[in-house]
Amino acid sequence: MKKKIYLVSLLISANLFLNCTSTKETVLISDAEKDVFEQKNGDPVVIADDESEYEITIIDPGFNAWLVSFARPEQYYSQSYLETRNRLYVTEWNQRVTQPFRFNPNLYEMQINYSANIDYGYEVNYKLYNYFIYFQRKYNQRLGHFVPRI
Image (cartoon, rainbow, N blue to C red; front, side, top):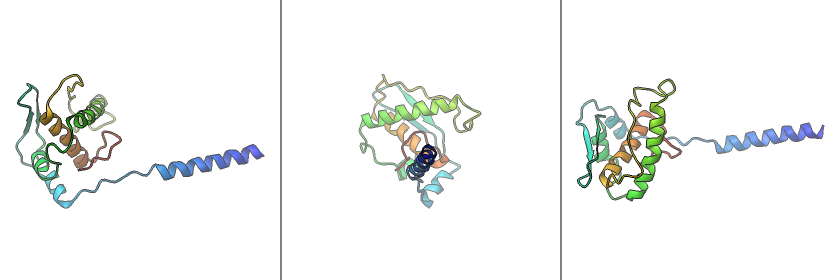
């Protein structure tokens, strides 16, 4: 009898612990940011670094306006910070591309070829990182354990 009571109390304790620690943080999005997300027109953003030959083109119409209006300014983050986050986000993104029945294939259309061994430069990393933040906030996605904040 003692074992059953102990086991039941252990399960109740575990349940209370999980309920207390599994709260999900919500992302607050302002009305101005929502307006940018709803834009239908906009120029593609070409991400390129003058010192490297690497380039990314983002066709999402609201990204450029969001980048100018809401993103942290350039040089706010270190390049190593951006590279670390981009590696995590690219890995998760590419995994989702390969699972079209689990994740929306309209959101995750093609893989991103990003290598940790290549120095893409600050500008490429800065804009790629901010696109991931923009994407997560706009489409209510979570590409990592981090809350996509601005």
